Length: 406
Ligand SMILES: Cc1cc2nc3c(=O)[nH]c(=O)nc-3n(C[C@H](O)[C@H](O)[C@H](O)COP(=O)(O)O)c2cc1C
Image (cartoon, rainbow, N blue to C red; front, side, top):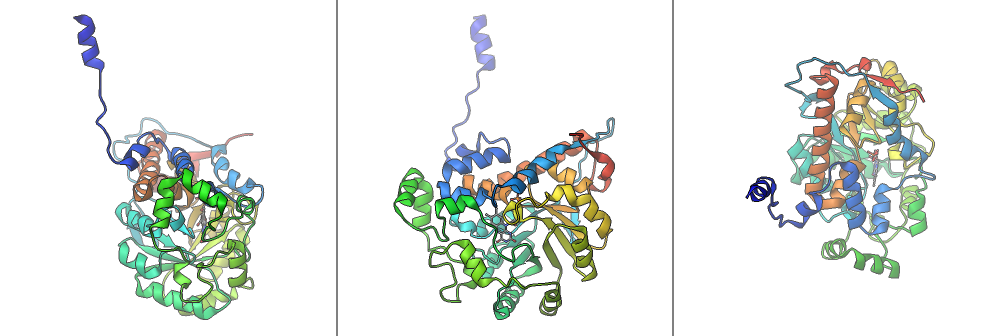
């Protein structure tokens, strides 16, 4: 009798979960877990395109591991019954100091691609940045999402193409542009080299075998319209419709001579905030301020460009001292935990931008996975704030953190 009573009091049957996506996500506790699910679900070449970085991936690794070199200096006996993560980004109020950064060719994770991420941004009240090399067009994203939308600019050799994209972005409700300045030529992502990765993926025997091992991805890929660089689709033969390696495409199309003088051209053609993405030295942060730039993104392109560039978090405080309030500062790279966001803010960032964190979610379970990835960062940030004795982002300052001795 006693045994039965004890068994009855402890036994719990889980409700069955019928959605395969929800079932897949049910065991994920953090963004790292979403990465592993995405790795299982996507063909190897696709996962490596998202996950990989330049050369030895030293910068890629340090972007995240440098966050681990920072310790919190928590305060105790602070009333943390209300935690406030709201903030202002370029004059607008948001629920979290997080921006969904630009990622090219998002549709190879799932057919909705950029639309899924932009819709998630609207639900989460976060800005979304559409890449020039997106696989859903400016107009499609403009219509699909009520989020604040920014457009990431690569400067084409033909400025007419850039001008046309800026006009389209303005007409589709995009409010800011983000000029990426670390891509004069494309870094060498050796995982892509080894796999012979092209955009769109070439269908060879190895792709077919990989596709058979990932039937859900393959079905989604084959039953939707072909993937192209949707924003430049009208420029025949340069639209990604034919398989090319990404580096060949970028090196053919982008202008490696872009310099600070081109900022004036952008100003003349864009009536709104300009963000410069890819600042890695105090001198360039200062120049950006002198050129009237509204925001800088301290970034090394997620380690995909110059290997051995410094991690954003390691140079943030020097850059924040140089900028001294003249521009909004975004920390871009390596964020995998809410605590990383809190550390970046303590060192002088005003917000963080994420790339892979949401891509892992997208690869793991589409739009739901993006919601989940950002939800995890949000919950972790709130928990880290409460445990560190910080009630609102306005209370975050350098006293909150210290660099751990080696
Ligand atoms: C698959 C992938 C594609 C990317 N495409 C672009 C792009 O088209 N334009 C751009 O400015 N940055 C691009 N980035 C860089 C991201 O915007 C961002 O700088 C980087 O992902 C930040 O590092 P994280 O992934 O560790 O968050 C890309 C990054 C990844 C992972």
